Amino acid sequence: MQIRLKRAYDPPAAGDGRRVLVDRIWPRGVSKKDLALDDWCKDLAPSTELRHWFDHDADRWDEFKKRYAKELDARPEAFDALCDHVRAGRVTLVFAAKDVEHNNAVALKELITERLA
Image (cartoon, rainbow, N blue to C red; front, side):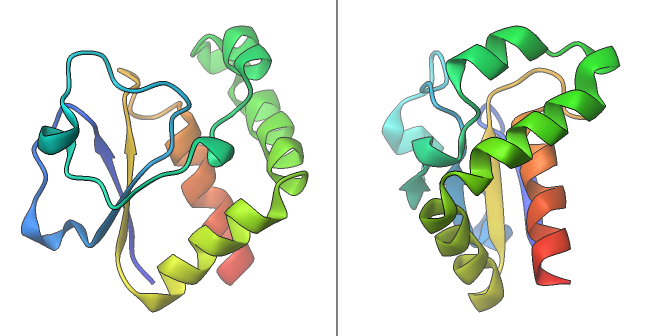
């Protein structure tokens, strides 16, 4: 099982495997061609309300992950489908956040890893 994380502003690489955008909003200034996605899973993105509450505040990180996990529990089809892709091969979760340590892709990777362990 290999899950990679990559900012939408970084160039795609041959070794990325299946590239999945996990943000609700399209990354600003990036064309669809340049992003080279296999999927855009808006259903896996945190709700607008949760994104606004979190606001990439590292002090809220642990609570964000708990709330995000609850939101994903309410959308099992999308989460299960992504887990199936991870079981099948390398997946790169693509995100637009500037903070590479505290964003929904990082939390999503942790949740997938826990599920598949």
